[in-house]
Length: 124
Image 1 (cartoon, rainbow, N blue to C red):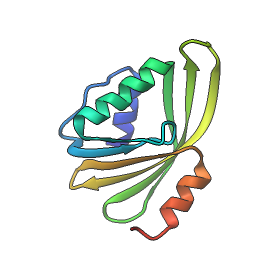
Image 2 (cartoon, rainbow, N blue to C red; image 1 turned 90 degrees about the vertical axis):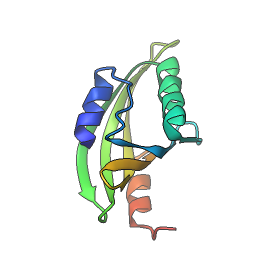
Image 3 (cartoon, rainbow, N blue to C red; image 1 turned 30 degrees about the vertical axis):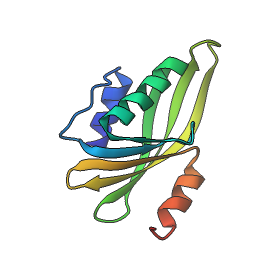
Image 4 (cartoon, rainbow, N blue to C red; image 1 turned 135 degrees about the vertical axis):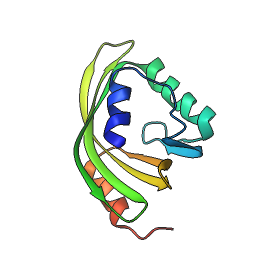
C-alpha cells in the first residue's frame, strides 16, 4: 500500500484515499516541524508542499517492519523549488503507524539516521 501511495503522489494525485488513511491521521513534518491532523490537516500539508515546490518526487530504498502496526521506510525526495528552480536530492525517512489497514501516524525525518534512531527508540 505504501508504495502505491508514494507512486500516486509522484504522479500528482493529492486525493486522500479513505480506505488507506484514517480520518484521525496525523502527519508530523520534518520540514515545518508542525503536526497536521485529520483529513483537513493532511490536505493542508500537501498544499504547503505544492505551494513551495514545483516538483517533489519520492523514492523508496528500504522498508522494514517494526512491529505489528509500524513500518520504517527509508528513501529520498527529489524536489525543485517553485521560486528558485533549485533542484535537490535529500535522503528522508518515514515511520508509518497503522490503525488496522489505514495510516494513522506519518512521521517524516530529515535523514535516514534520524528515522532509524526513532525506530529503535522505545515507543512513548
